[in-house]
Image 1 (cartoon, rainbow, N blue to C red):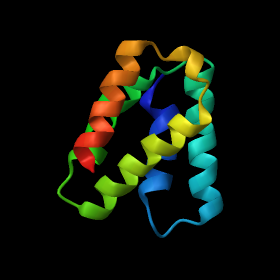
Image 2: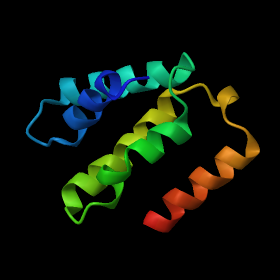
Image 3: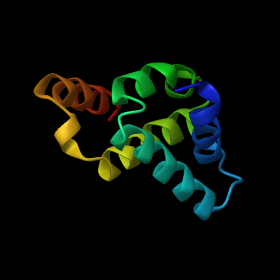
Length: 95
């Protein structure tokens, strides 16, 4: 999936000045891309690197929250044991 199809949704979510409706729409759009197998969760995480590793605590926390929100909206049949383990380790390391 070209970045132009998913980056605006990430940016809308991490921008705290946006409305809750825009945040929710971003989650829904990204979850739809993952559910339709147009974007893998691993690709999303790797492409979100700048949002997840920035020194801006607000952007980083919103990026992590976005991943959690997406995971709550996707069909878990797409995740194998390795994916679940890796994502669990990622979230645990952020706590």
